Length: 500
Image (cartoon, rainbow, N blue to C red):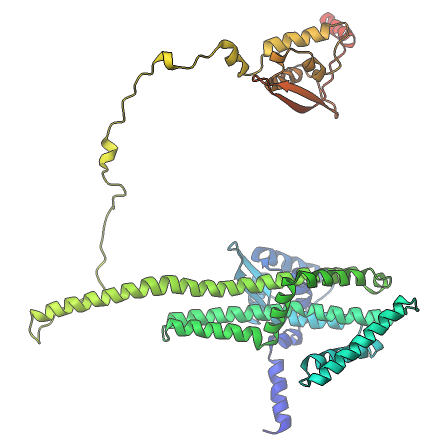
């Protein structure tokens, strides 16, 4: 095959990927717009019913806007069509609810569209400096020559020390230009927007491994130990041999280091507080940068959840299949072999016996759920009459002290307080004037009940009730303040009601 033919085959393979098929179709603008509106930047799973309702609403709004190139069919048919195109995937969440999520191919297409909607980055000092710094750091970490590594580190230390001394001495600190900040924010947003699709690729790869493991278990063409060893090897290779796996391991190592996470948040906060950031970044871009750590955490949680499902599949097979099913099958075969040897010992070599292919079913109309228990027929022990002299002595005052509020006595005290020449100002003042036997905690409820029965209302202020329990201990309660009505103001109203 010639070089140009090989290159054509590679390009055709790229165009056959679901990412480019999504971008190349006629309804791509409408589909990508709906995906961006429904799933957002974090690609959070959406319940099936909610997705159908949102897609229908978005399509109606797009039609009202005058767009005519809209995909045909019902919302359910569209979702199934997008699943067949490998742009949507349907699964069950932790609660067993059916949800939809974007595949890595769809996220990659959305990331490409997002990049094209931003201002195109041009050749600038920031980009050249970024390339030079990346190459320098890469060489310092990968150079096999020890002397070369030391020379690079010494040069970097000297440069940083000189810059530090210059700033400490009070030299002029050049400020970043607007073009420099715009280029930096653009590259940073481009790097962050690629994270969800990377996590989705790892998640989809684990899902594929889980399906292959289940198929191997059902086929039973290989020993279980070989299947498990194969899974461990492939999982390890997924984390070390693929770019997505290495990105996952790096993100996992980042979140395990509290100092790195704190430094990342502080650096992002300092960048967002830069005087030029308000003019260069919109609200959506600022929210995207501010939620970087949360975005990484959510992606890690989804990948770990998918890996846990694979581990659960292995555990279920090892615990139930190997320990129960294989053992029962082995015992059955041994019983068949024993019966065969017994039958062969009493028959000739040409004897035959009809054996059904499957054993007959046992028909049982009803199985007893409970059986006779002799302990149920034993009579309980006879109740012996207690001696009245052994009962503890209880006085009437002790019983009254533990009972409810004394409403009749409290009602009389309230009437006395209202008839007094210098009446108390509130219900709490009346409570403070009672004797200790009437200042139990339960008497507070009694006073409030009588006040509500008479139609008295409480203020927004509160007052303190110092209650005395029957054992002498004290307890303080805070209750809304209930003022007592003025008898002089209520008397004319009472007389007018009597005349009426």
